[in-house]
Structure formats: C-alpha cells, structure tokens
Amino acid sequence: MLKVDLQMIENERAKFLRHLAKAGRRVSHGREIIFDEVMRSHGHFTAEELVKECLQKKLKVSRPTVFRVLNDLLEAGIIRETAFGDKHRHFEHVYDEKPHHHAQCIRCHNFIEFPDRKEDKIYHQYLEKQGFKILGHEMHFYGICKDCQLKEV
Amino acid sequence: MLKVDLQMIENERAKFLRHLAKAGRRVSHGREIIFDEVMRSHGHFTAEELVKECLQKKLKVSRPTVFRVLNDLLEAGIIRETAFGDKHRHFEHVYDEKPHHHAQCIRCHNFIEFPDRKEDKIYHQYLEKQGFKILGHEMHFYGICKDCQLKEV
DNA sequence: GTATGTGCAAATCATTTGCATTCTC
DNA sequence: GAGAATGCAAATGATTTGCACATAC
Image (cartoon, rainbow over all chains, first blue to last red; front, side, top):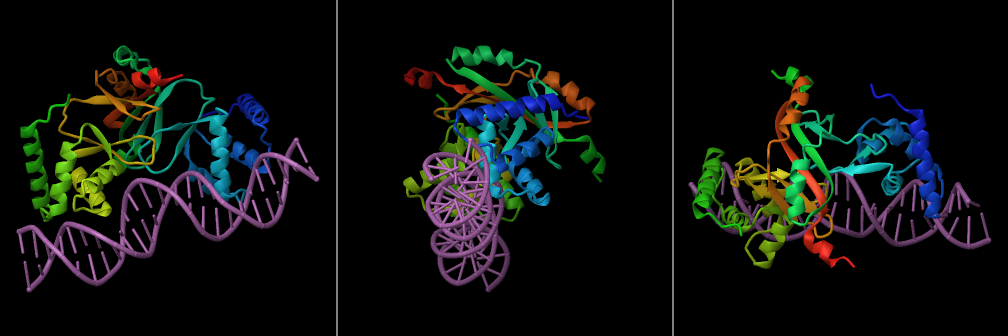
C-alpha cells in the first residue's frame, strides 16, 4: 500500500545525522536502531507501540532510550507529534509531505488519512482578524470504520 | 463576555438529576458542588484546573471526587471531552450548542473559539466513500495569540 | 438500614530523570 | 580519554482504585 521510498529514507537519515552533528550529539547504536524502526512504521504510531515493537524484536534498546530518541527525531524534524485525546503520545512521519488529516475509529482506534483541501482557509480570516498567528492546524474526524461496522451485531 | 444563562444552567441541572436518577445514583454533596463549579467555569477547563479551583475555595471535595463527578457529567452529556495533545484532560460544556472549533496559543495555552462553518463537509464525501461513519470532528489551530506576540522581544 | 458516595492512601500508566556504566568520537 | 548515551531503578504527574467510614434515600 504505502510504498517505502528508499531515497526518502536516506534523505531523512542524512537530515537526522546533520541535526545530531550540529548539536554535538553522537550517532549511537540506539539512535540508529530506533531511526530504522520508525522509518519502517507506516503512518501513525505511538511511543508505546514503538517500545513494544522494539522489545518484541529484542532490539537492544530500553524504554527510556526509545523516548529519548523520539525527542531527538522530533527536534530533527523527522517526525511530528499529533494531538489525540488519549494518554499516549502520537507521532507521524514528516517526510510524507502532503498535508493531510485524520479520521480515527472509536472502536479499533485505527486511522484513515485524507488530504488537506485547504477549506480551513476560510477560518484564517477570522483568526487573523483576532491577531492570532496561525502556525498550523489539525482536523480530526472520529467515527466508526467500515470493518467495525461490519462486525456490529 | 460570556453571559451566564441561568435558565440554561437549570436545564442542565435537571438533565444531570434525571441521569443520576435513571442510573440509581444519588444527589450527593460532591456532585452538587462540582456541578456548580463546572457551570461557573467558562468555555474550556481541564480536570486539574477544576481541582485547583475547588481546593483554593476550600470546597469540601477531594481530588478523586472531582474526577469521579467529571465522569458522571460526561455520562450525563453535560460536558464533553476535547482532544488536546497535552497530559491533562480537557473538557467543555455541551450546552453551548453552536458547533465550534478551537485555536490554542502555544505560549500561554489559552484558547480562542470560532464557529464551525461546515467547510469540513467537503471531507465527508471522501470518508463516506471509504465506508467510514462520521460521528463528529474537531479542528485545532495552533499558533501565537495577539497578547503573546506583543510580549515578544 | 442499605446501597452509594467519600476521603485517604496506595496503585496505575505513560513518560522522565538520576546515576553509575558503557560507548562514540 | 572526555564527553555523551544507555540501562536500571526510582521519580513524576495525572488519573484511578481499594477500602473503611460517612451519607442519601
């Protein structure tokens, strides 16, 4: 479905290494493993999912390291955090350049992504009139996905 | 600014009492105090803000009771939870019927509300084609509010 | 009087931090 | 070899829960 773009991954890796170098940080074992694991994940993921994946695969990284590297990746602009109402931190790749939004199923918690169509621009006028400087926006739909509807009794 | 609509509050109180009665729950001291306090709050609030407020005013309620009553109020449909990315639970009144969205300042964390203009309908077609049953949506803008821009050096 | 509500202290759960040890440069 | 990164265990902070006592109906 989502074809893994190797060139893109290499670009992201280069961006990450550049960021680390600039900040005087090192290319450690943990950062490499977790970078790869993040690149291997599709679309969204939570910190917890990533930790579980690493532990299952018996990768040599601990829970705190996963969180520390996630923060590195955030700083480097490789991933971004998306606001969802539950207790886990949600992330997604930045390299998937097209602006998009999310619909989440309230049963299975899976996501559907859909492209941004700029209709939110109509709100810009209102917010700018209030002197609010817009840095970004997210649109969240919630509902029930096809599969979960079929599972209903 | 936000005028407190006494009639509305009484309607909400009636709704709450009805809900409690139906569920065989009681109209306790804690539920009354916290209901009043929630009705007194404007727009958004977090669980933590409400707890602080109650403790400052030396109301006779404990932290766990605030959380328990918030859940009662959610169940009764008096308040709804809104998804923001931080660690606190965010709530808002349901009685403020007009659909609206939020812009949050990344510096001071205050909110601006703005009316829903139904532009999101353009997305419905896409999601429905995927068999996704939409139950609701939220739009979050983030940026810097007028006051915080003025405070910048 | 009995079932429900409450406060308290302790449990959770995701995330973060202190620190001694190990690794990268 | 010096400065960073890591794992471990413990700290944190919001929220929840168990339980003995208090209260609403």
